[in-house]
Length: 230
Image (cartoon, rainbow, N blue to C red; front, side, top):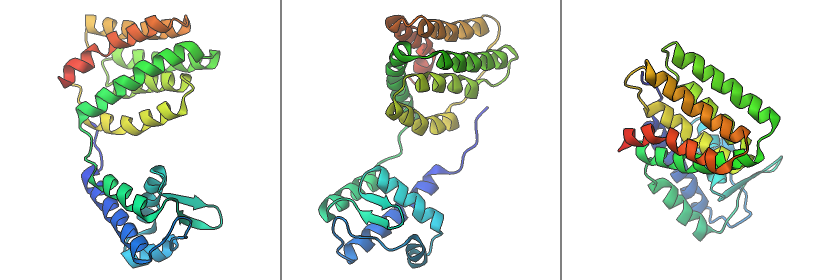
């Protein structure tokens, strides 16, 4: 089964177009750090796009630190004009990451997060992991698509790491992985037992606060995914 998704290339192209218009507007007004941008309504009318598209572009630019929204005041330039233009050009030229790159990033993040989770997990974290694990087991035993439940289990580990930056990165890369990953066959027979065991081993290592074992169990779990992208 392949999960359907809105055409992300088209969405990215539109967003980059809005970002380019914001850049041109900032330059035409020769704004400096701390200067206020026109309101979302005015930019929406000037660029002939809806306000939601303006808002999304501003959020992205805030993420990269070039704009800053101030309550009851508006959006201001957060860097100098030279820095603003340089960062905007880099943002626009960024290629969409490939599935392989996303998976490699996910694996790198998860190996770090599982170690932190084994060190920092709480009783509530273990409860959430157990619930996610049980949901995964139910789906895979019934021969159903278990991809989302699998990712929810991994997200529960991410939360247990107590590192919001790592969690945010996981949230960013998970949707495109879900959109691209195609499960060719339903796990049957010994494969069901093997997949369940791998997840249980990760959980047990975290529960035991065994950092090295948790990392090893996660590496074992990702063997199949690594083979998939090679």
